[in-house]
Image (cartoon, rainbow, N blue to C red; front, top):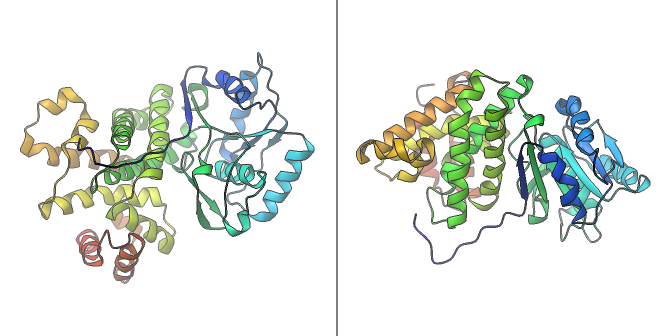
Length: 374
């Protein structure tokens, strides 16, 4: 690893992971003087609520309000309605169970209830309401980040990090959530690989990337074969959550940036596009004689396998492993039918949003490399 002369990395959440992790939530909330949370539930996690409630049996925490109808978007009317319920039921904290929809609402609600914030104008100056996230396999990838979607627009603030991230084995391992887990995992791989590939990053970012990639690469294949394997599901969801802190601290490369813009134009999932574009981005770098860090193979295989592979073959092996992981999504780029006329526009926009860190010529060359034969 190369340590820059100056770097920063901010990751606020406290992680509770493993067996009976939910039993620790009351203790952590008590540290915020909170004992009566409003619980917001993702539609796909309704069947898991009883498991959370049972975990509170021996604690002094009681659920003040339970919201099952989490919408797939956040708007001001919904926030005002939930804020009124929060005050009427005398709640003091917010807990989201599963998924980006529920977590976006929880983030928006916790900031709305804090004096001084103007969410209508995307101004977030503070957050005094404790916020906890309980992960399930209905994962979108942005739950443990500093972002949320408000009325179709992205809002970014350090105050949008959850205070507590709980990944409990009882809340994962459902076959119904496998597809969203796989898609979020390959998208997280793209953000981790590109987040530390092209610039000097904090050693904390690189350590987080190593952890996230290892958790996903070691466990995603077994989860795809055995969706009910709670050990693998726990590890993959944990990897996605750790990758969220990387995404909040590092800038994406050509694959991630192009994926975000293509998703807006086509309606396809951003994580799916980023994951599918990642092997092409690495091969494009290789063709242009750009360096692919050896640390990537170390994260993908572990030290024992890494040490047996010749230095000249490590880049190829990294790409091969990533291609095998991405293939678990069961989708190929040519199935998405990306139109050629979009490529020039996407390349121009990538240069703009990256502040010229990724040039239009480089991005257009990459997109033509990917979609030239489609």
